Length: 196
Image 1 (cartoon, rainbow, N blue to C red):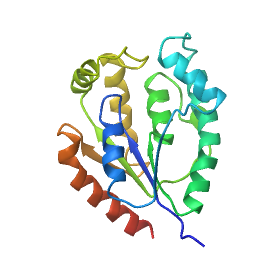
Image 2 (cartoon, rainbow, N blue to C red):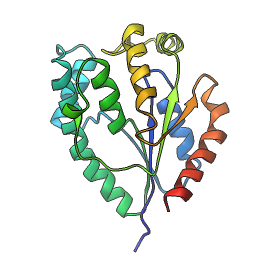
Image 3 (cartoon, rainbow, N blue to C red):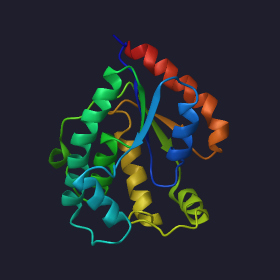
Image 4 (cartoon, rainbow, N blue to C red):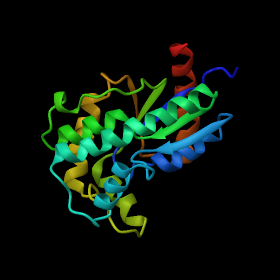
């Protein structure tokens, strides 16, 4: 029977480098599944994607985060199955994002409570909103729903306020991802050893 895999979560505002870092981090481990939230496999996930891409109007903040939670419930089952098979799962966004994005727009933490897995390591890639916007503009893609400087500033503050209670390690994401990967790999390996 395969030994249980490790669950690694990368958090941070839009434009902080989660996707690039997830792919670089995946090369440092064996038997890895890189995934992200929201997913595109659930009805809730598909609805979120449509809202983010301005194809549907956004519901009130609580209703929006309830969609993320519904998507996460299904996604968590897939994560648990992958971990049971011995895979290391690297997930871009997980539970802390619901609390950061929700409370940034007036939803209480109590209203956002739900069951979720405790990651073996959570890294919060901290980036000032202005720097994030520069990176987003360089993508040459249409901006998503949350990709506005004022919104990202609010969300960043909430992420930083929540980091300690979620056991997240805060890392300055201003350097290029290629320059951060050794530091991040060390942090993840250290956290994994602590969780054993």
